[in-house]
Image 1 (cartoon, helix red, strand yellow):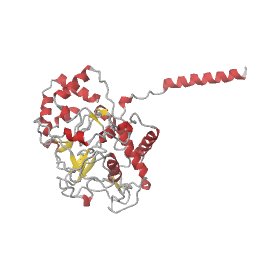
Image 2: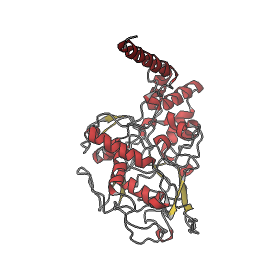
Image 3: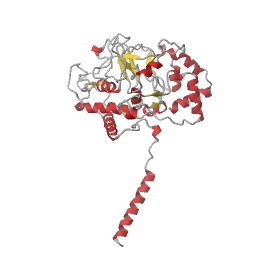
Length: 398
């Protein structure tokens, strides 16, 4: 046999082998079933920063890498599996503030309880007399879009005096920001404070602040931005490279928004109409738009998060006696609903909804809506069983 025939035969065999293997390879899950992944439009350098941030987000930190001495978790992903919601095992405890006068327990470890410690140290316990709440980690996808919604848009949606008489009086949370944060050019201030938009109480200004706080409060890791030892409160050299911190913040900014599913399903279409009809959209605003942004892919983008990012009084059902910033103990930021149908994927196959995960179904979560949402809750109760089913199906499609 000629050598050329042998080579051709080997190539043909390889092709057949590859094709045979492909038949046994698992198919990739549909893109709309995943929360993680970059948003469209990133250039090569931005994509590299995204990947570097993703790597740090998944990194397991050890004592040698700066973990502790007190901490809650040893990685970002342990609280946000697949970039999704947390569960009771990753829920954090925050304590020490009952009103707008500020946290009175900062000298005793506030505002967050570090319930784990490296060998040789004791984990924190709640101080006597401190009010507290338990907070389930949120999904982190699409957050960059939320960061660059102009302040003017949030202020236009706010109605703190309920001038339109609809019973909804959402307001922004004016918060103090750390010295290392550079306010966006479009951000206005009020008495030296800026509008918060992240966290259960909208007490966090931007994603860099969120990232730095997570390294410190969740993992006990000091950074260039906050070079303080969590245990002693004393200055300490940064324990992680600043570029890694910046890349995690960039990663959070450029995670894609959740992709809705089954939008042409007649039941989903019906549920979407009912969502507006019973006034869920009064707080869970379907559509927002970003303004200018330093990342081109984030600038002037329309998106559908189903939130107004405002504080709303949710009544005694959700008043746990603890707060942050200027929010009252019964006020909570409207959580985005996008990705709601995928929440069980990161929560052990079931739902843990509301700020502390107390609701194990969407129906239970709706029933916990009191205060400003009492009228909406009553509207929901007035729906027929079939209408309720359509509404839930729509929410699970987000």
